[in-house]
Length: 217
Length: 397
Image (cartoon, rainbow over all chains, first blue to last red; front, side, top):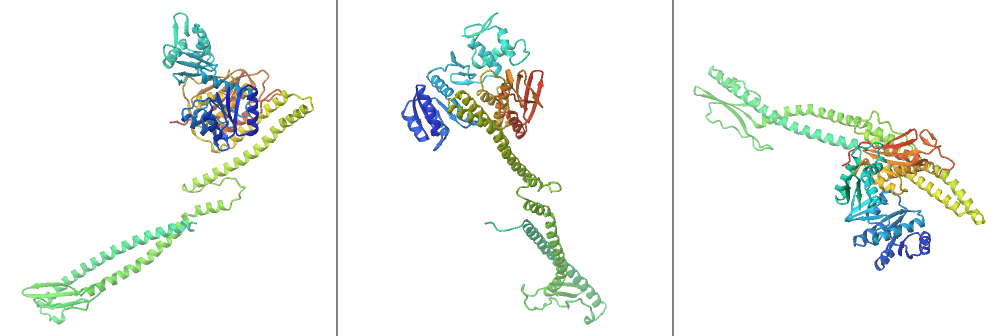
């Protein structure tokens, strides 16, 4: 796939570009915001690796600008800024992933492939169930493109059902998942969490099989 | 450049201006009242003397022997006494205050000129002013001395601060200072303490960096030298660089924690923050959000993130599976099962020979807890180690 590498550090940029070329990708390597924008505008990239501290400005501003124009090209931020607030700012600006230097070139390539795959359809860890997209790796659920926020127990129940997609999971199996959080759980805990899940993700997603348990299909 | 001025001078000038203005108004009112009272009193005197003169005339006393007061002019049996015109004064022509008494066809008029009355008034006013002026001088002197005395603590505080050595970070004593000045002394103390902490942090960082970095650097150099000589191992160099990376990360975190006097106080959603932090770790760490969708505290998200990152890394390093992050109201807890052989000294993990840890994790967490005013609780029960951070109860809007 064709990747735009925006990296201000000449040596790091050359090393990463070399690694990604050897992995079989077509690489464009630029070092400034202006060059990045010029390349971004004229080429349809499968993914962009974007540094934030560039000599002529912030990669974050460039990303916000492009997202403001509706550009959905997958972007992975690769930066030395490692604070949680930096990560949140990067993801809020529209980045699809965020890796902190020094990154492992192998892991970086895997992340670039993952965001590119997601842009083409579903990422490897994502499962579509009707209007619902469940990302098991990131523990996230989207319905019609809008993220639904689940608590950890609700996620545990949904994740178990999605993992066993098509199969019926008994109440005892689902209770096992909830035991990870508490040594003791209420007798109707599974019913409570299934009910809460239905109110959040839609009633039609989880089916009740009387006397057997629950399933998603 | 602003003009040089003193608080004492400004206060004295303003208080004195107010006192003089007040005194002038009081004096004007007093003189006006005095003039009014003098007129009334002299008018009564005229009436009494006119009636007395009439009594004497009726008793046969010759007009020339009738006693009259100072400034009085007596006129007898003139139907319309032509009161003499005097010389003009500053305030106009002389006028007369006349009282006429009549009885049994006889009439007596006694008059006083306004010039006489003005003279009487200024005699009384002069005595009044002679008494008031020294009093005002005494008040002014008292004001100056009182203002100087009242501003004495401020003067002494300023002198103490100015005379202070630049390397002296001991706090000022705020005892005995008035309420208006105490915040200044306390604020100066806060700044001194902050500068002191930053200097200590700088020294501590330099010491930690030197201590922690030299060994892995030496190892990496030895490995690259071996590699150049043809008998080294790329894996060992890579492992050494990995260890060096972890140490640099921890040292940077420690530096941030120690130099975090500018820690922000912002609403932080602990659940969202924990999800971001746990995304950096391999799957398997259980996040228990207490079944809440948001748990807000007021703190510094970056520092709390660093603390949680270190606690989880510590739990993964020293524990066996079952690392669990629990979040509750104003509480963040990391729990793990301690690996067999893990030794705790004073609730701190002992670093084993095979450990990949930097040995800085809990130091960083302790420093952050101190900076953010968090309570750090370490409990070890059987095979479980729990490290909990309690946030101060602070309502978040």
